[in-house]
Amino acid sequence: MNIENIVMTGGTSGFGLVTAKKLIQANNVNLIMGYRSKGVKDAVNLPLELTSLRSVNSFAEEVVKRLGKDKIDALIFNAGINYPSINTLTEDGIEINFGVNHLAHFYLLRLLMPHLSGNAKIIITTSGTIDPATNIFGSPPKHANALWMAYPEMDETLEEDDKINGQRAYASSKLCNLLTAIQIKELPESKQNNWEGIAYDPGVTPGTGLVRYSDEAMKMLSQQFTDPKTRKEKFPLANSIEDAGNTLADIALGFIEPPQDRYVALRGGKITFMNPPGLAQNNETIKKVWQDTAFILNDKLGLTC
Image 1 (cartoon, one colour):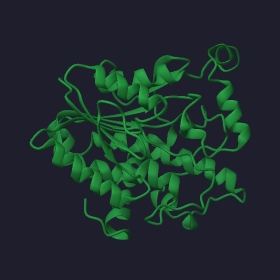
Image 2: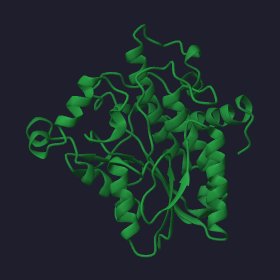
Image 3: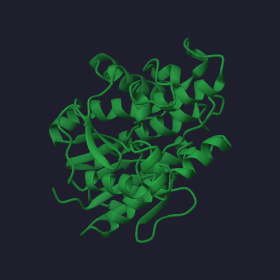
Image 4: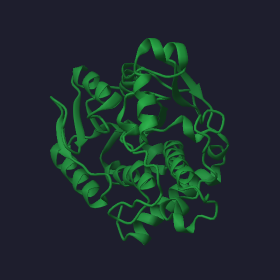
């Protein structure tokens, strides 16, 4: 497939910037980038604030306007937030981890679906925190209830410790990213147009902005592992920003194709193909997350998509 038009979030810093630069250097690629404060050289930079669904809608409208009659060959949803508390809400009153990581990207996907080309790729960044076997922080998801994630006051599984709740909110939102990628292939539009949903877990990649809201100890630890020698000796499964970013670009360009029913993960700079964890193996759960997310947008927030 000839990849020409790519729309991306989360490409202005961290490993996403590495991805963006590699895509821009590829032949004939037109990269449309959502940005908050600073865009990327040689990309089409359009303002996007993922804590505001109003901004998401405006971004989608501008993307369509810029494309004209052209179609989108790949969507890359890489932007994310890891907020240490469930008490911060988006502009729309949604818990911020769920709102930014899942709901905003789901809304953007729904808005841009009519403008995807045949054989388009939808690539969504997930996380190793979704799996109890790989979550080194100890707070993997307890459930995949989208309504509870969006409105934590409804959640019957909350802990007394808000820090644990925050860690779990992040992991749960990234689980939703995986479930969305899986569900894409079941959509009638997807089957008709041969779209491909791909989840990508960049593993632990020190030096990104993901820990910007973490405590100072976590920030110092992350900074320590940006050194290649230290990373290799003390945390060999961690990845460099360059490896994580180049892998994401290669997925978008079609150089990496995961086997059916698996997702791409990076461990120690090496590509692996992972089986989804338990909560992501139940077809009814996968379908319900999609339905409940659409319900939040349509019925709770009154948005049409």
